[in-house]
Length: 471
Image (cartoon, rainbow, N blue to C red; front, side, top):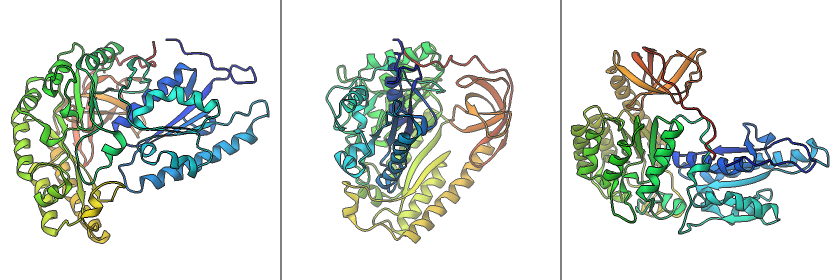
């Protein structure tokens, strides 16, 4: 596919620019890559400065506290850029930037966003990102557009995803969620579960390998609940097919749901050496009473048993998790059970948050959240416990030699950063330049609470040629 010329009205050849700000998970990151690819097809190239942009997109996340307020605050900043553009250009050049609200908050607020922000041009839900070009066309024709909801057919357009600057190839395998967790807004913002066909997924994996990506990451809200809509093959079958695809050096997947693991899926972690020994397995609480109120569908005992099975299949497995403190009705005994779980499982990292209600979810009907000072204390206690465990686990890696995927430049001059197979962040002196996405071997020299310091052992492998994936 050619990148089309897109000339401004004054007849110059100055390229149009787009700015995309992304909040949230890997699913949002990939959606932004999809939108950037559609714009690049039209000759609208990325910029890091929203003041230079002809199109500004905020790809939003609704998971965190006060998400809607934060989104409208940022849109308030962007509306100023639109007003400023009227004074920076000559009358012939004036073409005010389009502003689009995308992502989960867009799905959540819909038309209300257009009413609240007069300068907002369109609202685009996460299930409709493939329609960005058409939405822009409609806006240029004078319509303020709201494109939300969950269409039956969705195109992933793998050939037009802009993956420039990425060190891993992300592949959506399942969208949406059918779970009924009482605290979670994802089913309302991402819609019902829909799995892609095995053939489509493998074609995209091969496409990314041919492009030069060494690490593939399979994405979904409940990634291990994937089922081929035609054949009924499950996630164990998909793992085996992806792991045995020639050229896949490292395979990851996120996010797994505890009750959706089967023995065959667990076995794949031990049978396929290139499946990374890292798994994000959200537990949310160590208390059965809280898990029941959350609607998670498993007990603390069953989670412990799953961890035992996973580590029996893959002894070097590093686990991370999500935890919520201060959920309605959480007692000191409930919180103590969460601390006990962290001590027993020894997670390599945790993502811990104080509970905050989400619009449309069931949890607010279960009672008031725990008082903020109590929730604050519990969160700090949890984080302090985890920091000590993390440091101990990291210290156990000192002296180990590991293959590291290079993810970028370090904060210190002359250093690079990367990820070990077990997904720890590691920093080391740069051995060569321009190695984003390449592999190098390092020896771990020092452990910190949240990262590792290392020395390179060999020159890095050739990185992928990170040109836009456009054909």
